[in-house]
Amino acid sequence: MAASSTPNLWRRIPLWQRILAGLFLGVIVGSLMGENAGVFKPLGDIFISAIKMLIVPLVFSTLVVGITAMRDPQKMGRIGARTIGLYLITTAFAIAIGLLASTIFQPGAGVDLSFDQPMEAQDAPSLVEILVNLVPQNPIDALAEGNIMQIIVFAIGLGVSLMLVGEKGEPVVRVFESFAEAMYKLTEIVMSFAPFGVFGLIAYVAGSYGLEVLLPLAKVIGVAYLASVIHVLVVYSGLLALLGRLNPKRYLSGIIDALVVAYSSASSSGTLPVSLRCAQKNLGVSEGVSGFVLPVGATINMDGTALYQGVVTLFIAQMLGVDLSMADYGMIILTGTLASIGTAGVPGAGLIMLSIVMSQVGLPLEAIAVIAGIDRILDMARTSVNVAGDLMVTTLVGKSEGELDEDVYNGPNKA
Image 1 (cartoon, helix red, strand yellow):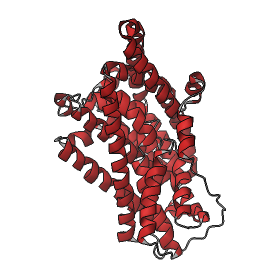
Image 2 (cartoon, helix red, strand yellow):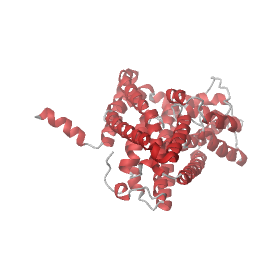
Image 3 (cartoon, helix red, strand yellow):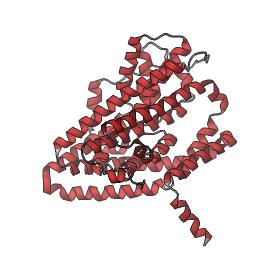
Image 4 (cartoon, helix red, strand yellow):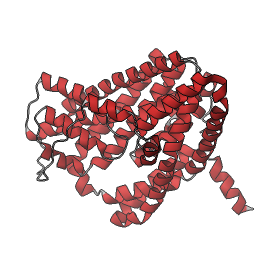
């Protein structure tokens, strides 16, 4: 009797609480075991592999279903314009907050760390290259390789075509609707293992980064984390309250599952299946809007990456004693905003974008080696901001289109 009641008790605990328990336990175990905590890493690897398994079929099916559910090409264009506009605005805010935080707290002042690892400048792709690469030459290859932007373009094209052919396309639409529902259920199954996967990931990270690595750079980590919290609480919550007339507390409580997975996995794309569940089950956003806005956001919305670029660029300038002009600040905001759009939602891509920003203001790229050692810790924070931004924009767009169920938004979380 006791054995059967234990699983029931476990299931009665909200998922976000189970995930947080796994996270905190992972920190404790990793700190105690040090590098030996790597024995738990396979738990995290399996969980991340399962999440990645969901990404391509989930993005493809939900986009097709979301577009066909709109029934109106003009509506899709309107939603797309609002989505991209909001993403660009919040990204500019993010990098400005990062710069302001570093200016106030001066994390690089008095830091004397050597760097001797050469870094080569990374050339940003031209606008023409970006546009050409959006269209897949072979959609099957794009699906197999997990090229999210090309998958989005193909799914939008297919969805619009099914919408335009009308009744003849209905059988195919029903197949995609059934497939999307199956993917939602598979996501639910995978997420039931999230506490164990998060435990394995965090135990490994905590064991890999000892105090001897963190202490000299504790200030820049603290500034980056503080700026991230401010961006979520002030910019995201403020936009929801001002533009959407929605209670920000409900938004913050509704996205906890996605934030914990984002923090532990450091992958915006990898968190997408969880973000979709949170948007639909907790925030009340329709499948059509969330299925369109979230995949686009996971690819082009990198507020956390932009914020990180502002903090770290100024940290390195302070560390090297370089005074940046107002023109340099403007260049950092402009370059960081544009570069973050092209940042893939995978761990570590922020370092590549950072090299682009630094090269624009004349800072030596070798200094990135100082940050590379703690990049994973910074990556976890910036990914959480990226995901929070995706869900905020999805909620606002849903509200503006009348596709936000406020009874669900203001009710208890179900994801």
